[in-house]
Image 1 (cartoon, rainbow, N blue to C red):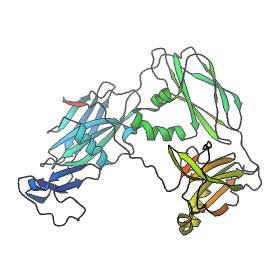
Image 2 (image 1 turned 120 degrees about the horizontal axis):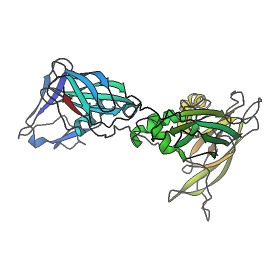
Image 3 (image 1 turned 180 degrees about the horizontal axis):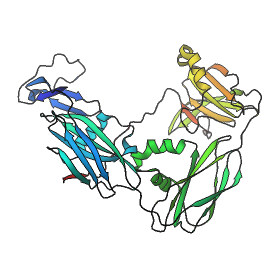
Image 4 (image 1 turned 90 degrees about the vertical axis):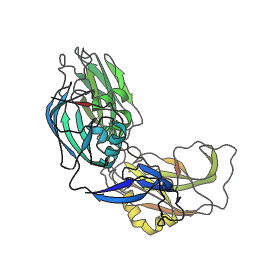
Length: 426
């Protein structure tokens, strides 16, 4: 394994390989994790590459698990001089790379261990019952280089539940865009909470948002996002999607305040459309200045109208130079199901929206609908060029949806900070 070593003395390093747009007085080293280190060139003597044989890691074996402590055995590889250790709820690092995890552990974990542990007790991690965790070690070589990551998963035991807390669920009413449920807890339930989403949506949100919100298990998310209740209650969910399978997650607590196993109730909303050909009409509206978060910009208003056979539809608008080189791929992507449960993939009723488009810009609007059997109809496509100047209305009208062409939002995953455990040799 090759390691990059910098020897830092007080001399000048000539960096003639740097491009002209890079400050020649700084050496910037960017890691795969996204972290970087900067050095003043005048303080460098030389850059040297050295080789360290084999993996540099601390292998983990889980021996025993309780809520109070975890017994482990940790053995360093031959080239591993030391290691750091921490423990995460597994969901919080499920999508994090080893490089990101290593960088976080290196920066945030203080304790460094310089010996093997044939048997040690890990405590201080504040473990939750019946939760999946991952124990992580990061190895260091003789130069103090952050090296390889090792992981070991375990599940904590459940706390005994008092009685049999259950919540009975009754479907009171279901329509195309809303449904009503009645919840009746039994005598063993001290309190409960419920939250609804399309089938698979809540699990996907749990995986995505657990690091952000600090959830350790699904029950914690249900309790935070759900409607808190005591006793019998009814609730109506509005603005739902027609012809969609929904799950309602219910988290009940026993008399001691301990989480029971969460329950899941499923239902399907009434469908729209028919068995005939589904299609969408596209109508161009005004081209005028509109308020885009405090800035008046030219906007093209467009109305998308599905016919009575449409169960759901999709639409999009592109500049011609975006659309033309990849029209077939764009059309194929339009008539697709979502890769995972998500809101606003489909639309169901007529929508009037505006797109921020500059004057004299050639664009293409497309739309397609599927019928109640899931059969996609023909794609509607119109090509238009925005006027040379946008009208300036006295007051900008309200919008159903706003779309800005050529803009993207990106998210970057992070590894959360948690209370650090410690190892005690036994």
